[in-house]
Image (cartoon, rainbow, N blue to C red; front, side, top):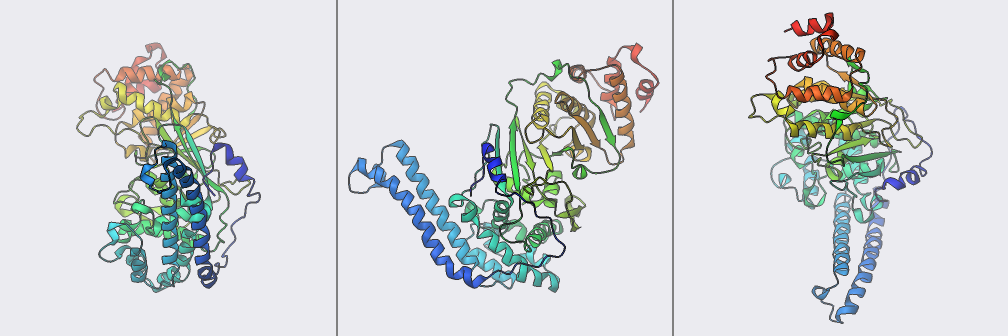
Amino acid sequence: MVGLQIDQTDKFRQKQQKAVEPVSKPKPVEVDRTTEKLSLSQEIRETLKTVEKEQQVVEESAFASIGSDGDNSKIKDPVTQIAHKKQMQNKTLVQHWMKVKEVLESGPINSVKELHDRILQYTEDSYLKGGVCLGIESLLVQEEEKGAFFSRILPSIISRSGQMLKEFSHGLIPKIKMGKKDKLVYTRTQVAAVLANMFLCSFPGAECSFGSLFMSRQAHQVAKLKFFVHYFDRLSSLPLDQPLGCIEVVQNVNTSQNCLLDRSQMPLLPARVHLEGHVHEQFDKLQTVAATPELFGALLSRGLGESEIRCLAAPEMAICLLVAKHMDDKSIIIVRGAEQFSQVEGEDFSLRWAGDLQDHSPKEKDGSFVTTIAFVDPKRPDRHDGNDVFSQLSAGSLNRELEKATSAFEILPDTSNFGSVAADFKAFGRMKGNLEVRALILWAATSNAGRELDLFVHKDIRFKRFFEDLRSILHEHNQTVGELLQAVTAASKLDLAPGFGGVFRFYLNTLPSSLHDARSHRMLSSV
């Protein structure tokens, strides 16, 4: 089964009519290794026979034009050359996945060393070529954890990894096309197969391999492994045709040459500031998460940002490491349908797994979760620039931010039912820059798209007071999106007051004095 394109989504959903609700303490699925091993050689022969038959058709067409000597280098027809090359690549990829399956299922694995030795028979990951898998050993310190991993969890991972040729034609995973609007839909069983092979370091070229995590005993790196092991632990109680539902990966691109929101006559819609609560709890809103251009890029390295934390809680999103790994200056990535499996505590080097999480967010009829997250990469101000505000408000930077936000909040078929956008300001703050500018850009972009805004500021009472005073003044005087952005643009040309509130105060000063009241005077006099 291949990843489905936009027009095939409904067709796929018809195959899964009934959602299966999770049951308490389900029994692990017993895997009959003997039966699988006996059928493996026959499966290899049948799969390779299919690939070779496809290749033969291409070669016969090519050889008919070059004679009977069978020299492939003499194929001159460009179309035939491309087809022949593709068939050879498909055959190589099928042989690779068959080798991985055969190696992993050649016998039981009862220790970290045996797992390491088995992986070394096929992996191209240089991290694993020397040393000891300290990360896995650190994770499995307790005998109980070690027993569960080798008796139940690892066999399930291996079974999932062996489904690549059943889940994807030739084991080839469809990927998002860069620079254009695109959407792919993967069954959650397809995603499980992909993540299992990432975990087992089996992708050709060591792409998205967990080798760096296997070899590190740093606490936050071991914690990353724990989140994925827990995900596979939960899946070990399900048959291979579950979980039901799908994961949608959407790339939206702003195709306009210029983002002209400064001319917009759309009214500024309600914007609420919350001192408590978290974005990941807002199932009825389009969740917005700050990321880097390399989406989840720090997941398999030493770093950790807000997007990586969200991915650890809902590991199915990690498929983006393979299929939608980079966002350019006009694109954003939206992921829909990922289930949360774990609770997260801490950040950066204090990250830790905080226990199991049962995701009670709503589901669609086919079992897909409705949770939808837009990943946006805000521009970081130049580290050598002494004034973050000037860097953010330069014409190029401001236009880029508006294009990104417009792409994220545009009404799409997958996001049309969300009337509000939820944004975590702590996450955007980690991207540096002036938070007042970021807040005003988010407010303008969400309003222009016809959506309300919910900002979660984690007990920042000062920001809440300033923003809500400004919001109420602008609402009362019917300010538009265009007027807001014109004022923000004008701020880039002035020497703003230092410290918090400079942008907000400047905006108030652009209003006629007749519009000022006690709230604006309080803001203008605050330090």
